[in-house]
Image 1 (cartoon, rainbow, N blue to C red):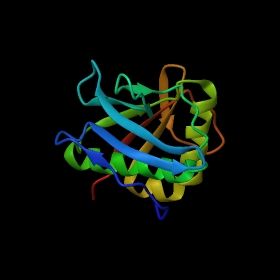
Image 2 (cartoon, one colour):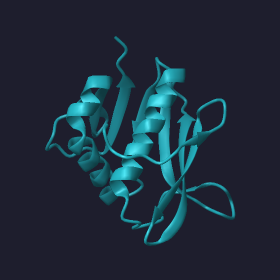
Image 3 (cartoon, helix red, strand yellow):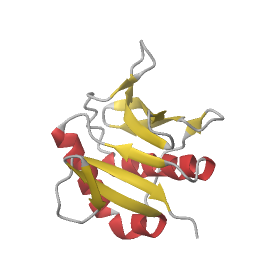
Length: 148
């Protein structure tokens, strides 16, 4: 993605990434976490503002810092780093609300032609996954890195 990104900071396992969003609302710390699930090789992508008191992800916070494209590009950059360390992993993502899931779908759609070069992308309809198609509503998304 040829979009400006924020600098990412991570610990050695590359499961947790932190970056700073800068905009009209000031400096907002963001977290991306790849959480292991009960299914081997499947990780949940959790993303949101960093709660200053608990240091945990607040996935319901609404920042409106006028940098959503840069934030999305930064989250995708964390995906690349995660897959570099865990090439056989699958990553699942869904929004904490229906509106956020829709925003994620719009972001994938916007950068689809670039993303499809490096990722297998799937959309979830009920309990099934299908190859991602632009214009289709999904309740979640699944990605796996392509390595040639």
